[in-house]
Image 1 (cartoon, one colour):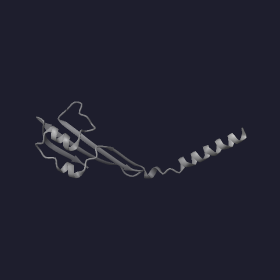
Image 2 (cartoon, helix red, strand yellow):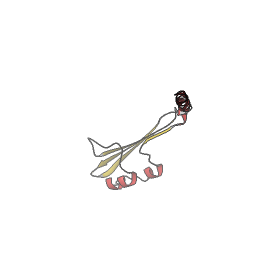
Image 3 (cartoon, one colour):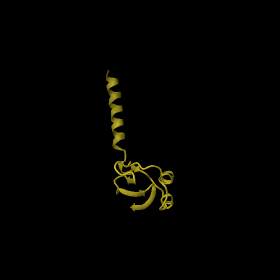
Image 4 (tube, one colour):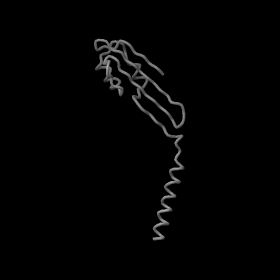
Length: 104
């Protein structure tokens, strides 16, 4: 019984010290659509919705009220560093791309 208690204590101590040594400041968090600049630069006014979807993929933010607006968002944060947000909004009319908005 005494040996079992000592082994459990040692295992608990080692597991807790391992958690304390984890460095959360080096953790990288990426979310959303990561769109390479080369791909975004290939967008042209007049592209069809199908061609645009094949080029960029579908947006993670699905349009609920307006199917003529597609929003792409990407966030990046390393540890406790600043949050980087990039947004791309595409507007369509009659299934053709009519406007592109980039927000850094």
